[in-house]
Each structure stands twice: as C-alpha cells, then as structure tokens.
Length: 327
Image 1 (tube, one colour):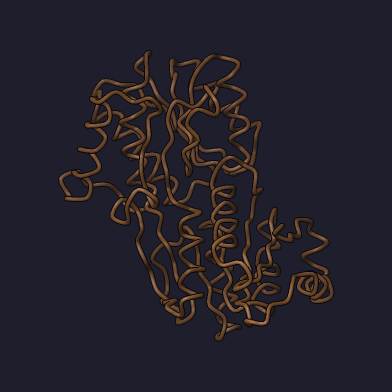
Image 2 (cartoon, rainbow, N blue to C red):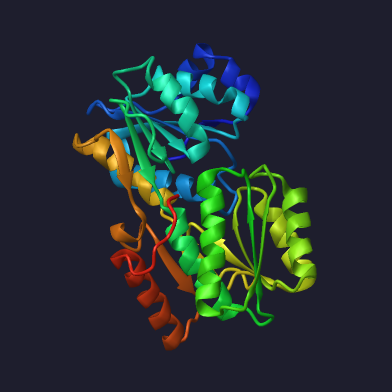
C-alpha cells in the first residue's frame, strides 16, 4: 500500500481539514487498526537517515498490514515541526519523530497529548516524560568502527567527515570517526567539518572538496540531502564515501562500505511495541548491543582480515575496552 504523505508547508498549516481528508483516504479495517503518525523531517529518498526510517515504515506496513493505518508527513521546516506533530498527535495513538531534531518539539507537544505515545528515533537522554520513548541509535559507537573501516580503505592516509547541525550527538560521532581511523593508523590525517544544515548540498560539497584538497580519499557523513553534495565532490575527484544507515553493497561503486545505524529498525520497533501492547516510555539505547540490525559495519567485499578486525573492534566497544562518547 502506498503511504500517504503531506510534504508542503501549506499542507501542514492547513490543519484538521487536510488531515481529515488524508485519514479518510486510508482503507478501513474491522480490526480497529492502530493509528500511527510519523514525521520524517527530510526527504524519504535521501539515501540516508530519512530513507532508512521510511524503509522501516514500509517494512512494518508489510508485516502488520491492516492492523495499522499510517499517516506520514515529510519535508518539514524546523519552524513547522511543532504544528506538524500536533496534527499527527490529534489523529494517532502512536507518533514517531524520525531524527533527534524532532526531540524538542516532541517533548513539547507530548505534554498536550498525554494519551498519545511518542517515540523519537535518534532520541537521547532528556527529561522524563510519561508518554515519550527516546531510542538512541548510538551513532558514536558505529562511527568509531566506520573510522576504522575508512582507515583500512584509504590509499592516501587521509579521511574526512562532514556533519550537519553541530549538536552533541553529531559532533561526538565525528570525533569517534577520527578516533577509529587513528586506532588503525595512528598517523592518518583526519578532517572534520559541519555545514549547519543536514540538507545543504552546496555546503556539503564545499566541505568535502576542501578535505579532498588536503588528501582525503574516504569520506563519512551524518547528512540528509546534503549527501548529494558529498557525492558530487567524490565523483568529480575520484574519492569514496562510506554510506550510512543501510547496507546497499553492490549498487554503487562510489560506496565501498556502509555503516548501519538501524533507523528503520527503530521505526519498526516502535510500531511492533504499539501493536503488541508493550510500548514503554523512557530512554532506550540501541547500538551494537542490539545486534546487526541495529548497528553494524560492512565493507563490501571485505577480506577475512578486515572482517576479523572490525568484529574485534565491535567486541572491544561492547566490553568497554574501547570507550566511546555518547551520542
């Protein structure tokens, strides 16, 4: 079934009438389906965080069919996020915010809708709210492993990272990517930059080109549509990118490896808990401890030595031998 979505600002601000029409267009079910609202702030085809979240939603719909009905809003400006969440909360039993950038608005709106459950994919430890669950993907953990993979793949002995908003979770992931690279090659050069916007293509390209000019030949990111700029730079200069969120090995030679951060897995988890009546509020860490669907690192066509080294690094992070930052 195609998931209905509203992506224009005018549609969000149109309020109840637009959303009523959307809900009425969904097929009815005699089983009283659970109403799920999901906010995907960026594009569901960004090859990154947002697309992974959307993929998880599609997978959940295939699994539960008529047991759930879905209302989705995508491509929302930060200024409109609270209004979008309010509209979703007024129509649904479970509301999912995809991305830590939704957290502040979710916590605010949740207080006005105490009977609605809210799950934040990419949430971190925050104020305790009886109807809000925060799912921490623990990006810093897998960023360390991604840095190790990048060092293995780099021919120039230089790697780079571009983040969007300069917030703690994104900055911590960048620091751990550099730490992971130095764990493999202590003398490796590492370049780190932030665009201030997950979706700014031009700034992401500029940051990547600057790193390439200094020798970086493998890049990592936490971006949404900004990834397009990194891709443009890498294609122009013949460098490589470690993809994020979902493994798509074999689909694009630009990407020799992927880190998996389970955004879609967490969307599925929230819906599964709602369907099963086991949904719980509070902070829940995911990351490597939750298994490869939640967090993993894949080098496409990896050697046995590379696989063994990555596995050992993951074990050392889980045991505490390698300590990484939060986020």
